[in-house]
Image (tube, rainbow over all chains, first blue to last red; front, side):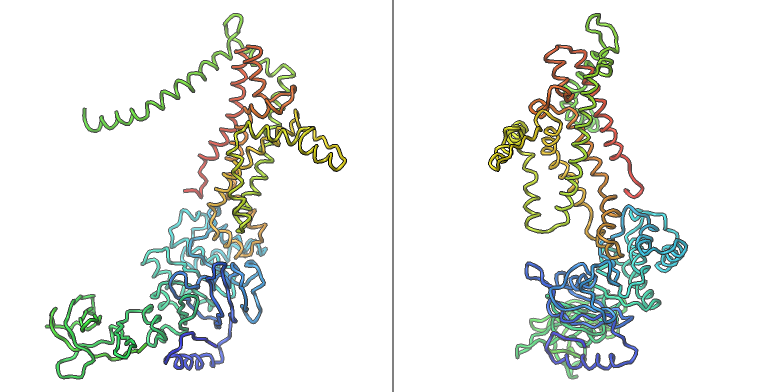
Length: 346
Length: 281
């Protein structure tokens, strides 16, 4: 089962959610990490990691650089030895296998296509090692290039492709070998925003077509939210929270998760705790109605279909996203009352 | 003068000292040496005799073949050993590897004359190895002095660190992810080496080979102190023609021959460097 490291009032709720899900009969565990520890010589690393990943699931490890997310991925791929614990795929331990014997395939952050080989040769390399017949190889390569949307590039060298195209080739190269689990290590972080969004959609599409199990690593919370069935939020080598994107967004298990995912106002309370409110949960209310805080408008910024407003409430600045019609006639410097539709306390 | 012209004049002024020095001490002597090599010392007329001498005299022919042999042996052994050393330094991450990575360049900082004498005191028939063997009742005489083996050993001392330096730089430019990618799709370590590491570093190997080869064709200190009387390395043969027999025309011809031998290697170097493969853009 899922292990949540954060101890707080939300934990129970999340565990219940997961129990309901995993009780469904079609959920087969594909990848299981059992009490896995990986310590580097300098003391960094991850400790006592437990995680079950189900067949056909996209699970994203999300966290800042140095939080250990890539470490976990690399231990699955076989590029790092584990210090203790076990990793199983389809119920079989893989920790003692070298990378070439593992049923995993990895797409790396840096485009790691082999620069001295054409796209075709890059894709054929792994198939040749498996002694695939030539006609089958040609067919498979053609099919996979079509799937990632770059047909007809067979004779090009990686240096003649754009970053996005290179990553498409890298994904095709990994999928060709029909891995049990596909590992993606910040594959889009070197691409510009627009291409990144396209690639995200592409991965999601391919995943739903093939039903393949994917472990994805990123530091981009938007990417994690958009792509994942479940997100593992990590901090300093530990799991802060494991849950679906909506669980993590709506019920962050810790202040850390709350601050990492999406926008959040943190308001210190008299009793030493902190109240956390999403900007879209803050509403402007008329005088006389029940309100949580009041203050003065500092800024009003129109951001398309909604307006971002910052309100100075004593020492705190509360950010709120409000509808355009709600803020008509309100100006900077006006006194306003705020009502919180939903909040968390940490 | 316009601003543009002033800038150009300033540019030429910066280049001029280097240009003049090269013309005076490189280009000019080459022209006169080539000219001299075709000159008959008696008549002052044009002749091929100075060249014919080196390609017809049995001893001189032996010298040329002997020099080629020593150079090729040095290149082959130095490059193989340097490649293995570079692989170790690139892929093994241990304190020992780090230590070796810092120490292996030390030979580059020892003056060549000092190094040659140091080697002689060890390998000569009454040297360190002989003394140690005597302690155990054996009388090991290596016979490496005045023999190709001694010179090749000495050349390795100079050239392995140099070649390793170049090849290590080349291997260092291969990202880990390329190797990990190959392992990931199922390549064994050996297959990864032959399909990825070797093709991606072969250019550095060729470049290092040409440098090692060229530096040994004209070597002098080592053959002078460790070489035999016959056959001789070309550096010594040239010294003899110039300093002992005062045959300046022949010395010029031999210089041109040595230059041509080196230029084959230089051509390989330039070709390898200029040839942009399709994938190098």
